[in-house]
Image (cartoon, rainbow, N blue to C red; front, side, top):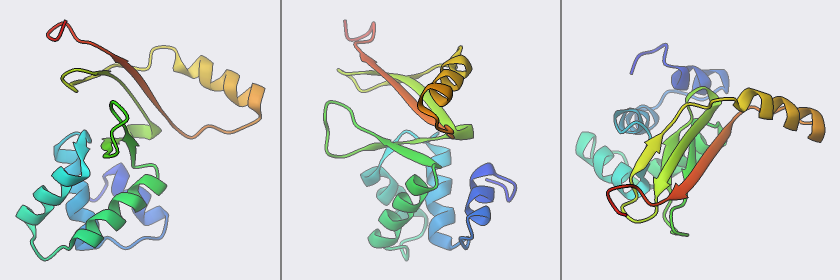
Length: 140
């Protein structure tokens, strides 16, 4: 993680300080490529810096969600979300409902859909999370 990371820049632009808790949580999320549960974030942050408390980790996850750095995703109506990184404001994947494995894919022609939604609904879209659910070949 570098000082010119888009996520660090987003924190700075929004007027937030780069605290040790925020930087550590961000490092954990980036190391896991953003597919991680809050329990796993807590465990990994504690290994890196035991002085960072549980409340700080959850406040940071909430802040990152508000800023669009991450988004929670729920598999099988789980109450515990898996957080995904929102690179450039969007993210796409297929989730196997049996083994919970993620398959990321490029957005294809999402630009046309985005423009159509903006025009039809009179909104400015800043990002999206597209999820498909199914059963992978290994679980069939």
